[in-house]
Image (cartoon, rainbow, N blue to C red):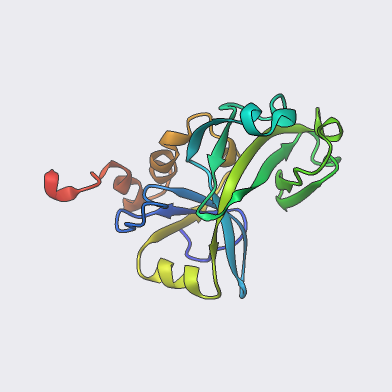
Length: 186
């Protein structure tokens, strides 16, 4: 486990994080520097199908083909994460975050993207922190900061991702995946 937040890392909510926006969440950091941090919650699918809101993207997104709740900031906006089919020739509108994973501009015409991505997921809203805010939350024990995998952003079982990410960690951190939400009920 590391404690340095940077692009590509995962923030895994601890049991002590009581904010309902982030309880048992896994946040993929897209950017983190002295000006703050930005990420998306990757394990919160919504019941809204992409086709119901962004018809043109219906055949490009992966399963599940729903919008994901990326976070409480800017809930009227959307951003997309993608994995290029050919990392050496990503599609138009794609900006790499870490090797094999990037943000796709949803204003890009779909026909310029089709076939260029192996995976695409669309997030409504995002998670954001001001300067020093995320570091303070990590220091107070709200987040585990762990290495991410590109596949985490496209999990076909997003409801299991919090537990799965914790289970693959070394040492006692893996054990926390089995703790009940309220230990006093145990």
